[in-house]
Image 1 (cartoon, rainbow, N blue to C red):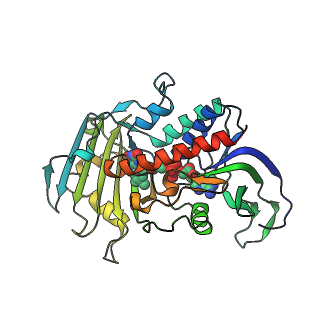
Image 2 (image 1 turned 90 degrees about the horizontal axis):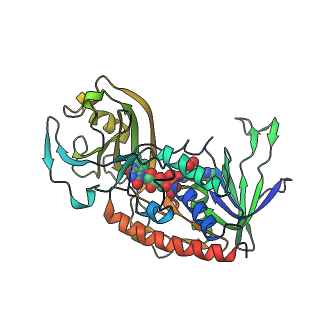
Image 3 (image 1 turned 30 degrees about the vertical axis):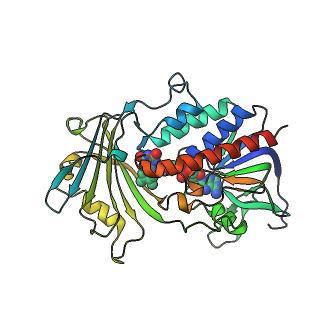
Length: 357
Ligand SMILES: Cc1cc2nc3c(=O)[nH]c(=O)nc-3n(C[C@H](O)[C@H](O)[C@H](O)COP(=O)(O)OP(=O)(O)OC[C@H]3O[C@@H](n4cnc5c(N)ncnc54)[C@H](O)[C@@H]3O)c2cc1C
């Protein structure tokens, strides 16, 4: 860390990232130790700003965390009504039985962004301090123990020089630091290396998920429908496929996931997704609609054997940052995820008993 003079703030627990993992960790910490001073830093301009909306939520963890979520007006308004699974070729599609692990009975189609905003409100009501617009840029490590983070500096020009508006990042010091940065978080990667957290586990593998949110014609919209496809336009040796979720307000979350171990170097996952939208069974759904937003994000694909050690002196990795949180519609990996989550839970219990004694 530089010798620059910085402002410093002390908390019991600092959480990096206000995604589902960071916010639920904050809530859990407050449930276990209401007197603990818990701070969350989020690099997005607001909670939910960096979250790709439109997801199927399996509510088991939420039921455990906040059993009264319905009374708290959680934005889970669209139960899944039907699941479809098809194999595409260039000209047609064939309906297949939905594999058991892709059935979504009891799950909800949600806006993950809205869900995070709601979680943020629950956390703040419990006294958690959330600082949006503050990226954690560095880790404070003293004598082999993580002691918090340094937020990014403001006022640095494109040329890397300090401008008049320059303000150095601030230190947030804590007894424990929880890293919930999502997949391939920059600080999480550094911590895995610094504390040898990946020793003895398989390398992580990744996919890329591209998602668009559309408003489609009401007559084409079937609230609560979940559709998945495999096949065209991907080559047969490429892992991936599409998803379509019909959510509220005639919206459709449509997206494509491609495993990043594809062998054809000329293949472009983004262009494959655009090609997919021209398929004769997909194009009519979008005609007359408009795209509202879009984004892309990496996904962990490695499974349980790729999950590193979660805890290190002074902190822990949670959620996608450690490789354990994966898409809600792939239960075989969810089982792995649940096992990792139970390890995370016991780590949170230990943290709670250690802070704010
Ligand atoms: C295309 C696609 C579709 C998906 N569909 C589903 C689905 O249907 N159902 C499902 O259950 N899951 C789905 N997922 C997976 C789901 O998005 C993740 O499992 C979940 O978002 C993980 O939560 P998280 O909190 O660990 O990470 P994230 O949601 O990635 O949140 C991390 C947060 O940390 C912030 N952050 C990162 N680094 C820093 C830093 N250094 N400082 C400050 N803030 C930082 C980010 O801005 C972000 O807000 C999908 C993923 C993709 C890509």
